[in-house]
Length: 588
Image 1 (cartoon, one colour):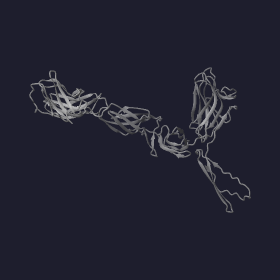
Image 2 (tube, one colour; image 1 turned 60 degrees about the horizontal axis):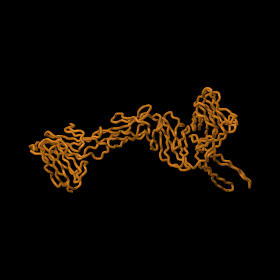
Image 3 (spheres, helix red, strand yellow; image 1 turned 90 degrees about the horizontal axis):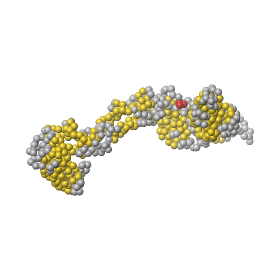
Image 4 (cartoon, one colour; image 1 turned 45 degrees about the vertical axis):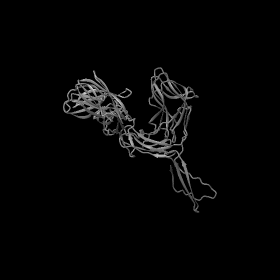
């Protein structure tokens, strides 16, 4: 409130007389509803009589009620603007085509002309309103879909916001009812316009007929306000084009950057956005009914310096999911400032792995990237933002290590001269589709597509050898598990005279036992273990073995790496011309 103040001398006042005093009060345009202005009055006389009082005045909604039946042309204080300057346009019509009572107003459009004509209401003070109710009768006479009609609003006479549009088809006589909630509602200089725009066709006389116009305010429910100022650090941006948004409410500031948002009671994230600038968001603004919360913004001009923020990665097997925050900086309140998803200068992101571009996703709010099926190794990632005028500096760089699960519990046995038996269990904790195993000796691949969890390496030369066993997942391979095996000639036994399954030792056993057998000639040999039900528990040997004395260790586990229970088990040795079964006991 602005109230005149000062000392007023009333002179001598006759007894029994009354006095009327006038106080001038003015109200600033953006004063919120229910704001209370206090006026203090001090009254005193020369006889030492004093009296003090206070008056409380509240800002209330200005009623809006504009009705027009178009009985006079042009309507009083309405304005007709034609940007085309062609024949026809808005005119008087002594008809009732729109469904009302004659006369009415019509936009008469002659053939082969271009029109862009406005019928504009007087300036209306809508301070305190957030929604206006519009009703009117109309009819659209048109045979070809060649122009559109619309309703638009403005608060400055220059920037118009479309609130209703219709393109092409005929509209029969009807009453239209609309709720107007454009950013211009709530302005002291609100205007509404009926607009026709487009080209008419040859031999066609078209028209939009309107009658019985009514625009009224809707009583405001209790609410609060977010008010403040927006400023720009640099650039050629227009403050009036900034969009201030809280929830589903959006308004534009005035030419000085001042704004007021009318919102329901609640907690809001308030954002200021202008194309070409880094949008700013202030989070967690708590608005109570009839209270005003101040929020100011400073918008920085968008440059290629602004890069994606907080790049991170999640690993699942050999898949990597990257995520990041959209480009931005910190504002004066240390709240996150982000480029709006509507930012027109943004083109895409560019994702780099080990220095090479691997993807270029968009739009700007797509802040995740899935990089699947990677081989074992260490990967370095960073992300940039590509704008219409160039590429940003990189985000933070992260390193991610992919480790495919290798075989577990790898061991070996020297079962005979020049023979090494490699043993292992399946990989632990993997959800990747397993394919097979590979076996390496001294860096050379000696066996591929191995499905069982063991491998016999025959005719191994004397000396120290390095073995590696890896797990293969489709096209990808784990790091090998390394074993060192030293072969000596200490066990250079003679070739046995017979093929025989000798037995196991110890027996009973816990947790493992060694099965001994001999071959008098090279043969395809299998040794299998069964439980009392006749179910196969473990396949220990299944391949060609040389003539020699052999031994193989059973660790008391089945083919899936699970420990077996106590009890009686049978083991069978079989070659092309020999078969034998023996019994052993597991004790726990």
